Length: 130
Figure (cartoon, rainbow, N blue to C red):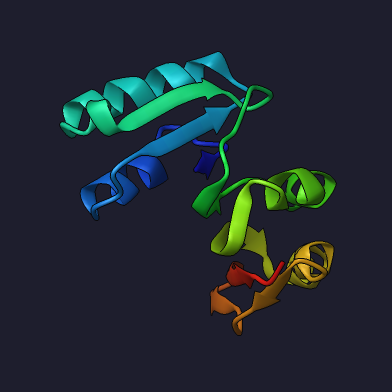
């Protein structure tokens, strides 16, 4: 699942790297349209399914999201609920100062690797424990 897919770049990358099926979700209809068009351009449209973020999201092995930290925190229980036990979570586009807050929101359900930091941006990777 690419949650908050925007232009679809993460969904497309997942498909190009071998994901059989990617669910791309966003609250913005224009983002869903852009994702669909970009998937066509990259010849992976048959493996990327777009839908509104408030619709049904299947349980998944990997959920990736590059959205605002406040939204990630607010939706932590919902987002976490879509990741299977032993599944993985990748959260990106987080400012360094906000990373501990985001990590704490998901910590009851996930075990985190050390954060990856570049300049003032952080990417968090975690595995679901239960």
